[in-house]
Length: 67
Image 1 (cartoon, helix red, strand yellow):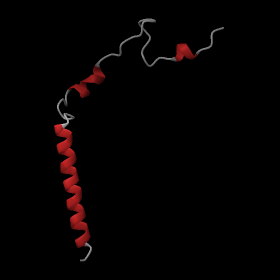
Image 2: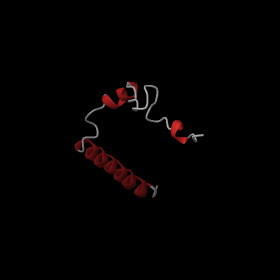
Image 3: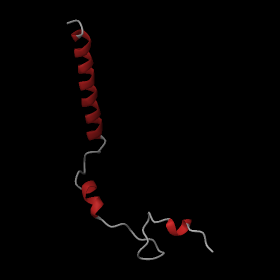
Image 4: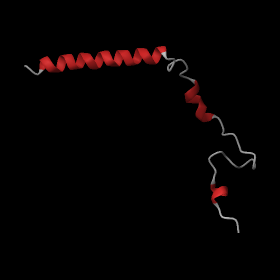
């Protein structure tokens, strides 16, 4: 029974911290646009100038030694 004197204030502190964190996120604008990040994966990467098939993450051509 005496553990409740520790657990209940600790739970209240966690709840207050969660509300404060949520309020800071809302005021900071982190929850303004919920649709665009989900749709961003559907867009193609921008190709590099080397050619139409090269992508930004394709670095294998640079790593190969020239003979």
